[in-house]
Length: 425
Image (cartoon, rainbow, N blue to C red; front, side):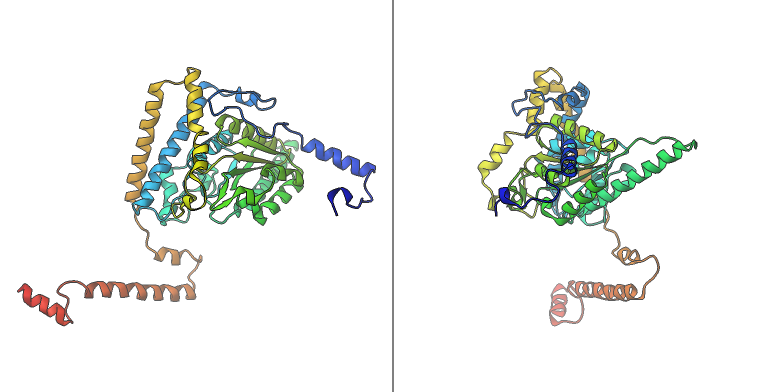
């Protein structure tokens, strides 16, 4: 049975059905363009009927800041990859190619907003003032997190695909209820200081969009008008699975099924990403419900340092996207508009090298914590099973020490050792 031959319902053509459709259309209103782009790959700035107004708010200092942020996080990414190759990190998740999507969206948030990342949002972490050296603690395996989310409103990385999306919606619903309570208290004439309205932004990839957690999160967010922005970085590859396998339509279109706006933006255009995200967060803070943003970008490097992308994609595809490089296009614009000169770009490079040196030294200086603290932190109070497991672990570890002693030159107990000792004499 085709779509045009589906049976009608008892609501078709009734006032109830017409009202529901009208409300849905009103909620789904937005820009008509299939993809929002303001800054083209050649560095020319275009216009958009909705988002140019947001781009016009940016001054020269902010635009230079966008470039500096993107260059800094790319330099950090290169350094972290080198640290992993040198054995200083257990694993690394590169972001090169996605700088505009992360810096543009991160800089559009406000301090009171709360951010839920996945495991690749190093650029967003930079915009939220997370110490990037601390960020590497988790990838070195010496910490379960690396930073305190309460300090920056930037949550810990989530390694399980899409697990952060229901957390984000729940947090947003909590914000929503706190604001209602605060408004009620203010209405009663109490001396209650007004707090700035807040929203939540949650990041996930095109691969994670196929997870049930994303669907369930969007259902809840829509049903309760939660102040949350779903930010999907469509980097075209979920490890070795192309985005065309995840969806047959633009991912942003999925929002229509949940009853809230979906916007597709050029994820390599930092100005457009910033404008779209600023619009979405403002909308969420004002109580108009969630928004889905699909940042159409590309992962230039490997999924992780354990991955080899040459096994599943063509080098010509990578070359095509390198021509859309987010740093190059913004540099062209800054130079063409006389907003930045050689001295600025030289300073940006020097700042990036300084960050890399700091991160490298800090990582080398990290001390491996005593594994026994993991046992001590399992429960609030001592537990007999944990004590039993700790005793087994200590006995197991001691065995390695005994083997090391026996293998030392001159150790007693073997003919070879005695012969070696005799020769030495």
